[in-house]
Image: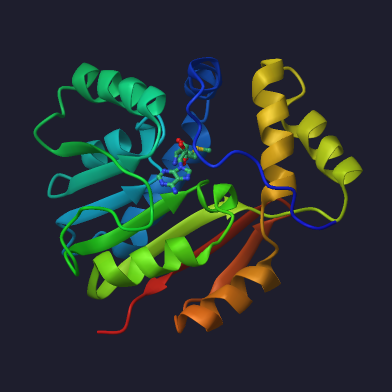
Amino acid sequence: MDRILEPEIMDGAAEAAAYAKADFSDSNKAFVDDVIARFGAQLAQAVDFGCGPGDIAVRLVQAHPGVHVTAVDGSHSMLALAGRAVQGAHLGGRIALVHGRLPGLDLPQRHFDLVLCKDMMHHLPDPQVLWSEVKRLGKPGAAVYVMDLARPDSRDEARAIVERVSGGEDPILKEDFLNSLCAAFTADEVRAELAIAGLALPVSQLTERHLCIRGRLPG
Ligand SMILES: C[S@@+](CC[C@H](N)C(=O)[O-])C[C@H]1O[C@@H](n2cnc3c(N)ncnc32)[C@H](O)[C@@H]1O
């Protein structure tokens, strides 16, 4: 199956609220734990592309006392939800929420020790948008941690995954998940895009539906 693109920015209030209401706590905790285990040393400035409702940023600063996160999203609805999460956790001094759409974010170049991006890449019609921002905003030697969905071979297979993983969830969320699986990249496609970008970052297929790109920019 070829990619079936979905809307890039999740600006619908109902869609953003359904996403924020879903319980991603286990996977988000596992994500943040692994980020810190691999890249926690000498970590001060992180940027989170496509931060959505802000759970990753909140968890990261709660788990790592030295880090500040710049959390970016192109969706006002998502950023409003992220604002509530940040205020509720009293972390406004360590998390900056920025409305912006990749590429061309108005952020300092070669500034960040860690570039995070979870479940945003599949929204991009052109994934080079992500890799160009990784290269432009990451410091030399910066850690890069991108996690995303992997596209199954067919829409039927994608639907079977949705039913298996989130059969009892909100129908809006299930539809969103199905569309996201169909919009996602395969591991080989990501490897080809990284080669075009000139980035030597390893791509791992962690499960039938998860891809991970983690490594460091050249020093
Ligand atoms: C599926 S959500 C993931 C949210 C969060 N990273 C998480 O894992 O919970 C994807 C987010 O990326 C945002 N997004 C998509 N394309 C973007 C772009 N080009 N620039 C900024 N944000 C973008 C969407 O608005 C949405 O909030």
